Every structure is written in C-alpha cells, then in structure tokens.
Length: 138
Image (tube, rainbow, N blue to C red; front, side, top):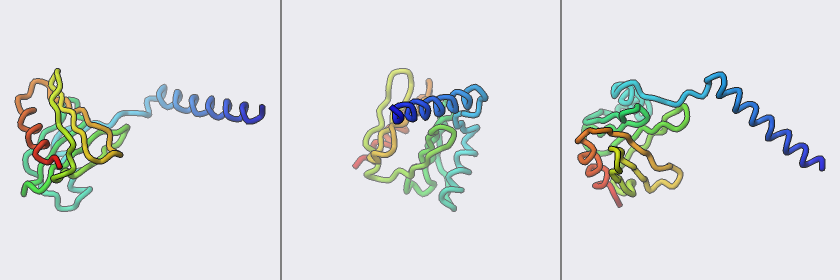
C-alpha cells in the first residue's frame, strides 16, 4: 500500500511540474529564424562547415544545408527546445517521401532519430531535395 501511495505521489508531482512549466510558457519549441542561423549552428557543431545550397522549413523547425563540396547534407531538426543535427552521407538516409500538403518526411537509418516532417508548403523545390536525399540511400 505504501508503494502505491509513493508512486501516486510521484506521478502527481511530475504532472504538477509539467503543468506549471506549460502554464508559465517555459516550454518554447525550437525555431530557426533564418538560414544564416542554421549555417551558424552547423559551423558551431562542425567547425569549418562550408555551406552550399540550403532550405529552411516553412515553420522554422528544420533545415537542410548541403556542404559546399557536396560531401554531406546537414540536417537540423527541432526536438523540444533544442535542435538535433545529423550529417547525411551515403547510406544514412532510409527514405525521403513527399506527402500531400507539401511536406517532406525524412527517415534515417539511425533508429534513435525519429522521422522529420519538413514542411515545404507550395515550394517547387521539394522534388529537388527529395531526390538529393534519396540519392543518399544505402
């Protein structure tokens, strides 16, 4: 009985902290302002990253930045209030599929990385980036 009360109290405490965090607005999701910020984050993560062609998600939650030498594509994806970065090289992309509504869903061979839904909106560049990513399939 004591264990049940301890478990219930712990769950109530955690729920209260989550509710307070939400109520205070402390859980702001990550968002990129522009492509310059995406390139800056990649350069900070991998010093000397020389950016080439790039695209920013419509809502700022993701970015794709190709290295100037074409050796990889930097993927930045919002996860909570931070960005997770992956450098995509041949064999690391499982699939890049275009969905209805103008979004690109990117699945990686990395099982720890959830699929990224990249909103392109009405951009005709979606096919171009899907082809680039699918060329990196293993």
